[in-house]
Image (cartoon, rainbow, N blue to C red; front, top):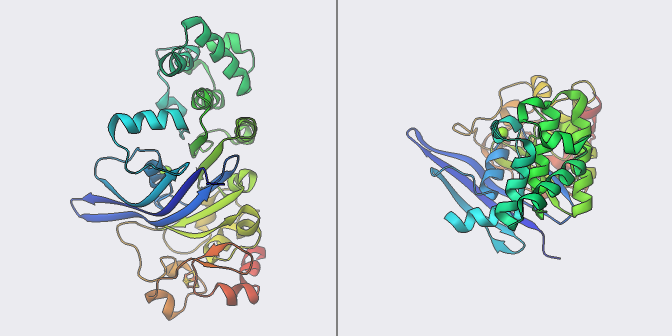
Length: 333
Ligand code: SF4
Ligand code: MG
């Protein structure tokens, strides 16, 4: 079957007064209907920029190369009204901060109903009825009452559920989520992720979820792409990547999972500084922080190659490190 979404050698660069910043270099991955792909990386790794390129949300200073195909159709070539319409029909989108995407002066029911009136030509009463139904689908209690409330009257978790309801209102084939649970209380994160997974299954959507939280990846991913300094450094099924990492960076993140729940705290356990798109190290970008780095790592760029476990990883020493159990040791130690 044709993948729902294919990202193939995606480059994104920004022209700035100080020169060109390459935010994404050669990102490649694909997603089938009904699957969740988690793009895992820290701030500055290029994961959000990749999502913005797919969703047509790059600022005008952004330049792209490579391909993004949605159901076989080229996305990067779309512009203006055509792009806007394409995204509205095919993508549901949810971002980190629901408050910034909701209009404080309208009830949440009106905001959902508006989408159905504009895009489906629904009558006011049909749109309202459907909005109430959507609130039930995202597991908000007492939907008829909640629909009449304003965003500020709802908790953060409920507001994110409203955003999810708006995102699925037109039953899009693809759901894009950028750090959807990061701003939420830890206590409600799991439940919101569960609702998203339920909707993915029922609507048979593909989901691309961007996160810095390896716990989120472990909870929902079918596939994982790990990004570092603008590149995908490891990509495969969740089973392969999260259980048998082939890249020292992935292994380091996993090593901190039991003790430290988030990547942000995990990174304090990895020595050195996070990547900076304006000044990417030569060779393997991870070499200044990698405990396995050799001289070659500082000069030669490692390309993605298949590992013994079936995924691809961009590390010169994957075979030796996995054969010696070094990545597992890092994971367990
Ligand atoms: Fe570490 Fe070298 Fe592998 Fe990069 S290529 S992850 S520096 S061992
Ligand atoms: Mg981001």
